[in-house]
Image (cartoon, rainbow, N blue to C red; front, side, top):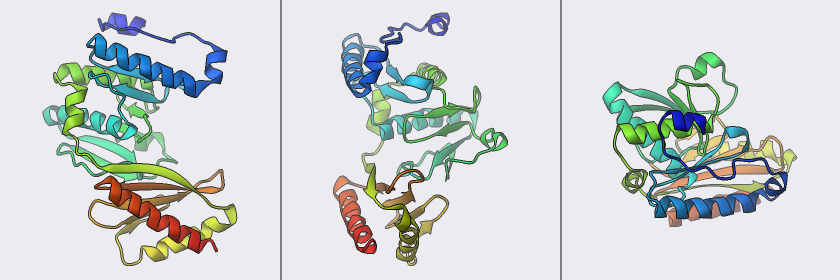
Length: 261
C-alpha cells in the first residue's frame, strides 16, 4: 500500500490480512475474491485488477472490462505490452518454458523457449523477462525471482506509459486453443513413454529440450513431460481451434493407453 501511494496510484486493497481459517479453504477464497474484484473493477471503471497469491509469486489479471484473464491471455497481454515497449526502446529478450503458447508472433521480442529449470544467475540476467504460462513474471531489471508485486506495478507502468487498455490488447490476440492436463502413468512406465513418444516423432518436427514436443503442423503441437514427483504425465497441447486440440488429446490419450499395455 505504501509503494502504491508513493507512486500516486489510486487503489483499493482487499483481503490483505492474515486469516488462517480463510486460507484453509483457499479455492473458495479465490473464487469469491475473483467475483468481487470483477464487479468492482467494472463498476468503478478501474484500469486493472491484480490478484496476488500467498508467497508473492503468482499473479492473476482482471482487465478494465471486469473480466478475469486466463493464464494464456495474461501471458499474451504482458508480451504485447513488452512488444510495445520494445518498439520504442529496442528489442527485448524473453524466456518462456517449452509449454508456453507460441501461436502469436511479436515483432520486437526475441523469445526463447526452453526447460524452465537449472538456471544460473548469469543466464537469467540475459533476459528482460522470464515468465511462465502460470501467472509467474520475473522482470530482471528488478529481480531474478518471480515477484507479483513488482510485476503488477510494471504492468501498470506500461499501461499508463503507452496509453493502452488491457481489454484492447486481449481482443487483438488471436483466439486459439492451449491447455494442460495430466494422464495417469506409473513410475515404471515413464521411460517407455519417452521412447514411444520419440518413436512417434521420427517423421515429424520435434524437440527433446524438455520432455518430448511434437509439432503436428506449423501451429499445432503436443508436449509430454513425465512428472518428477507423482504417477502421471504432464500433457500440453496447442492448436488453432478447440475442436482440433481435443482431437489431438483424444488421439494421444488412446496411444498412451495402448503403449501402457
